[in-house]
Image 1 (cartoon, rainbow, N blue to C red):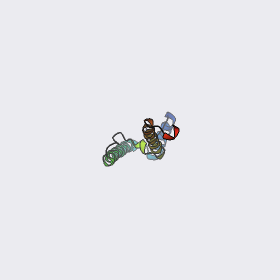
Image 2: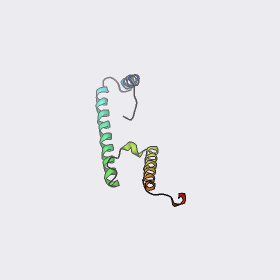
Image 3: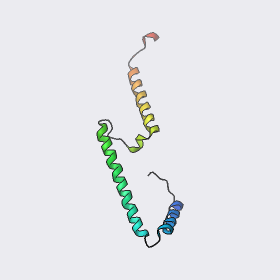
Image 4: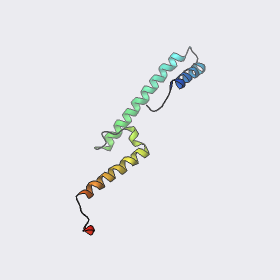
Length: 97
Protein backbone atom coordinates (compact mmCIF):
# COMPACT_ATOMS: atom_id res chain seq x y z
CA UNK A 1 0.00 0.00 0.00
CA UNK A 2 1.22 3.50 -0.78
CA UNK A 3 -0.47 5.31 2.08
CA UNK A 4 -0.31 4.57 5.76
CA UNK A 5 -3.75 5.43 7.14
CA UNK A 6 -4.82 4.62 10.66
CA UNK A 7 -8.34 4.32 12.03
CA UNK A 8 -8.40 7.95 13.16
CA UNK A 9 -7.51 9.25 9.72
CA UNK A 10 -10.14 7.08 8.05
CA UNK A 11 -12.84 8.25 10.45
CA UNK A 12 -11.77 11.85 9.89
CA UNK A 13 -11.92 11.41 6.11
CA UNK A 14 -15.36 9.79 6.35
CA UNK A 15 -16.70 12.69 8.43
CA UNK A 16 -15.14 15.22 6.07
CA UNK A 17 -16.63 13.44 3.04
CA UNK A 18 -20.04 13.37 4.69
CA UNK A 19 -19.85 17.11 5.32
CA UNK A 20 -18.54 18.05 1.87
CA UNK A 21 -20.57 15.63 -0.26
CA UNK A 22 -23.62 15.19 1.88
CA UNK A 23 -25.11 12.00 3.28
CA UNK A 24 -27.54 11.59 0.39
CA UNK A 25 -24.84 11.65 -2.34
CA UNK A 26 -22.17 9.81 -0.33
CA UNK A 27 -22.99 6.25 -1.56
CA UNK A 28 -22.74 7.27 -5.23
CA UNK A 29 -19.55 9.20 -4.48
CA UNK A 30 -18.05 6.08 -2.86
CA UNK A 31 -18.96 3.99 -5.92
CA UNK A 32 -17.39 6.55 -8.25
CA UNK A 33 -14.26 6.73 -6.10
CA UNK A 34 -13.94 2.93 -6.13
CA UNK A 35 -14.27 2.88 -9.94
CA UNK A 36 -11.59 5.57 -10.19
CA UNK A 37 -9.20 3.60 -7.97
CA UNK A 38 -9.85 0.48 -10.06
CA UNK A 39 -9.05 2.37 -13.28
CA UNK A 40 -5.84 3.77 -11.78
CA UNK A 41 -4.72 0.29 -10.67
CA UNK A 42 -5.46 -1.13 -14.13
CA UNK A 43 -3.51 1.72 -15.73
CA UNK A 44 -0.54 1.14 -13.42
CA UNK A 45 -0.57 -2.60 -14.11
CA UNK A 46 -0.74 -2.05 -17.87
CA UNK A 47 2.08 0.51 -17.75
CA UNK A 48 4.26 -1.83 -15.68
CA UNK A 49 3.64 -4.75 -18.07
CA UNK A 50 4.44 -2.60 -21.12
CA UNK A 51 7.62 -1.38 -19.45
CA UNK A 52 8.67 -4.98 -18.73
CA UNK A 53 8.04 -5.94 -22.36
CA UNK A 54 9.94 -2.96 -23.75
CA UNK A 55 12.96 -3.40 -21.47
CA UNK A 56 13.41 -6.99 -22.55
CA UNK A 57 15.01 -9.92 -20.77
CA UNK A 58 16.35 -9.42 -17.29
CA UNK A 59 13.46 -7.24 -16.15
CA UNK A 60 10.79 -9.91 -15.62
CA UNK A 61 10.62 -9.23 -11.87
CA UNK A 62 10.46 -5.44 -12.22
CA UNK A 63 8.33 -3.71 -9.61
CA UNK A 64 7.31 -0.02 -9.70
CA UNK A 65 9.16 0.50 -6.41
CA UNK A 66 12.35 -0.61 -8.16
CA UNK A 67 12.16 2.53 -10.28
CA UNK A 68 12.53 4.85 -7.31
CA UNK A 69 15.84 6.67 -7.91
CA UNK A 70 17.45 5.64 -4.60
CA UNK A 71 16.40 2.00 -5.00
CA UNK A 72 17.46 1.94 -8.65
CA UNK A 73 20.94 3.32 -7.91
CA UNK A 74 21.36 1.00 -4.92
CA UNK A 75 20.46 -2.04 -7.06
CA UNK A 76 22.77 -0.96 -9.88
CA UNK A 77 25.70 -0.40 -7.50
CA UNK A 78 25.10 -3.76 -5.82
CA UNK A 79 25.07 -5.59 -9.15
CA UNK A 80 28.21 -3.74 -10.28
CA UNK A 81 30.02 -4.65 -7.05
CA UNK A 82 28.93 -8.28 -7.39
CA UNK A 83 30.23 -8.38 -10.96
CA UNK A 84 33.53 -6.87 -9.82
CA UNK A 85 33.83 -9.48 -7.04
CA UNK A 86 33.18 -12.30 -9.51
CA UNK A 87 35.76 -10.90 -11.90
CA UNK A 88 38.49 -10.60 -9.26
CA UNK A 89 37.96 -13.99 -7.56
CA UNK A 90 39.91 -16.12 -10.00
CA UNK A 91 42.75 -13.73 -10.76
CA UNK A 92 45.88 -12.96 -8.79
CA UNK A 93 47.48 -9.58 -9.15
CA UNK A 94 50.99 -10.14 -10.57
CA UNK A 95 52.33 -7.14 -8.64
CA UNK A 96 51.55 -8.91 -5.36
CA UNK A 97 53.78 -11.92 -6.22
